[in-house]
Image (cartoon, rainbow, N blue to C red; front, side):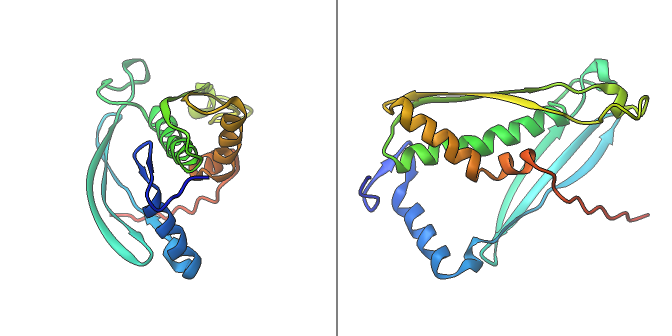
Length: 186
């Protein structure tokens, strides 16, 4: 194991990570993180989501990002941005990527590259309500992770299992989540 008080691996400041873990161990409230996104319709199949901030450990942190979405022409869109399914897969990949890099870093493994390729197949009959027996979402999502660096195959397998055990978006996709929707009129 590395001396995490002086080491930065794969760009990850291990001392800062250690300090975060210590703070959470001392006060579980420091572990609470709340993310928020607001999405507005921009016409046809286009939308734009806005991120203005998040809460961590009871503290508000300002951020400012916009994320566009659209559908390809064949799905009635203007093909001006990734569609929601591509954004979903991108979000899952990005979350797992953090895990692969962090897990490699705390093990002292220097990565040359990390790539995640994800795909899933939908049947539009479910989405369009044409056949009640067809699910309107994915039955399975396949992904392949390619790690290259100075780790051993055994270490990479350990990292892979750790990411599957700890990634929030892997967790979110691998089991049902309660969705509580509210409707406002006007």
